[in-house]
Amino acid sequence: MRCSPYSLIQLLKKRIKDAIPLPEEIELTDRLRVGMKLADLKFEDEVLDLGCSYGYLESLVLSEMCHSVIGVDIDKEAIRLAKRKCKGFSNTHFIVVDIEKGLPFRSEIFKKVLFLDVLEHLKDDETILKEINRVLKKNGVLIISVPHKYWHPMRILDSLLNVREREYNLADLKSKLERSGFLKSIISLVEGQEV
Image 1 (cartoon, rainbow, N blue to C red):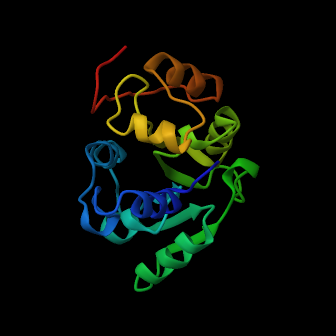
Image 2: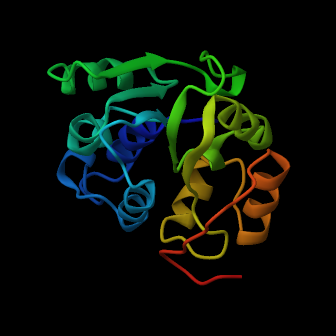
């Protein structure tokens, strides 16, 4: 079973009533904070947010900080909500895309790509990493976040709900990035310990 972040939240909301904070009520998680810091966003940046869900980052941060932002998600309802949430921002656009079938963008168009807590849900992670490398401009930046293989507070719940295809350790992630054409990778751990 594959779930978009929005669908997963809806599922969790039904199964664990009020046990977790809802997205509209939470602040950026530590992983997202580090990701945004590493992204070093500039006004002239063209940003692609893969797995944008309902536009949380776009409405809080990206729309006001970047030249243009495109949010992509497989979930039509999430994209509908994202469009509504960010309707006042002319530089922000959302489209429904199954990223496992490829990215509908020409090569070398984005300065930065945010890929936060999505990769672990995809069947063919290396193919999408190669696609991301294709749409990134030369010297572009990919900010990626995945749960650590050996430390993740929701690991048991995730496994019960069968929402992930795989987990990563540092060596796995570095190897996949290198095989996908990324020459330089900076990996920062926020939670857990390095393996």
